[in-house]
Image 1 (cartoon, rainbow, N blue to C red):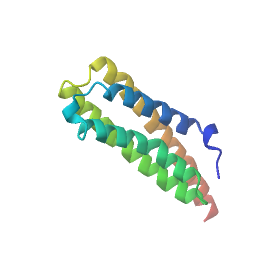
Image 2: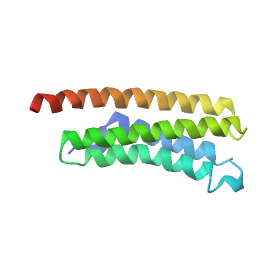
Image 3: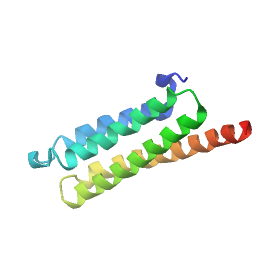
Image 4: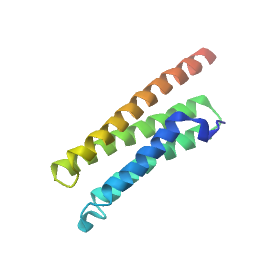
Length: 123
């Protein structure tokens, strides 16, 4: 079991989620059940899956949940780009969010590589 608040990747995912909530607050009200909800759910899914994996009993399970978190980050990336193309999200807000997502994806990949080495070492 990991101390969640000490995981840099989890803290960065929390920050991204807060920033996504702020960015989507100005989306049109008719998008409440569309891109607003979808973007927020994908954002929340990232730190939530990191947390769930960290709380599991095996490195293999943790690695699996990191993969799910990474998938959610790609989903979020797609939704934010769509919001920008629909002129709901300014490029000045989009680009910093995409940078955060990119950094998180790199961290997740690196973390998974490290966990893969641990898993393969045990076999």
